[in-house]
Length: 279
Image 1 (spheres, rainbow, N blue to C red):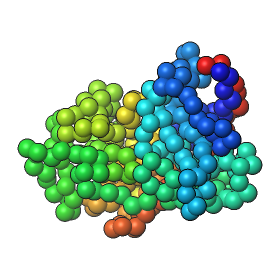
Image 2: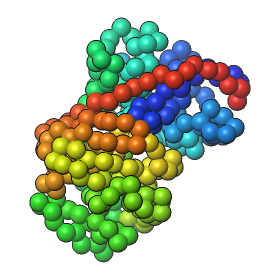
Image 3: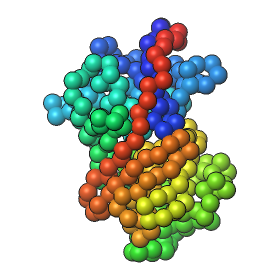
Image 4: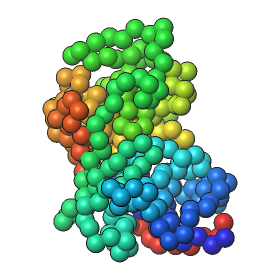
């Protein structure tokens, strides 16, 4: 089959975007793996699929697949590219839309300067949401927030629609992301695996972040990972309510008022090129 696609990125986190609003999405896992392969296909961190809404309260359905072909719950950087694509492609005249993911509804707003703000929903700390099995572990409390001892470090665990385990490091560039990241991802406490975040606190309003993502490995940026890191930092008493997150791919702004308030993420969304590929 011949597939039309658009290549996009959000702070270096790159995507293949597929418009499935007019015909059903029918790629097999093998075809998605080829599409995501950086040597034999197009190459990307995730594949984003735009489908018609299945609910009157949403404008579109938003599906995310890792480059392994596995469908996942959420991708924050991808959500910014999603709204940029549907506006530029003329699929909607709105600059603020609502989309349904696997497990939550997102509000996306294209700003006048081209950046996108996403209402990411409230963070979830219940262990079943990740899921996280804390059997045999005893947390240390930091500002009343639980930090769990795993793989020799202390991890904050929470869900932003997908699972995250975040640690604070002294120097993010020296952190053993490529060694410890996969160990945390596959740790027995996380039955569906987990995204591993490495956060350096630069000030109460600034952090540097690297994230080792499930299936994808380390990416240049992770939007849900940035949200999880800032939420963990606020809960632990290290950060204020508005934080700039420096990733290897660019700058994100994360805001959270605490409690059940939604996390707001603002950052870039860039089209790279349109293309076709035979799969």
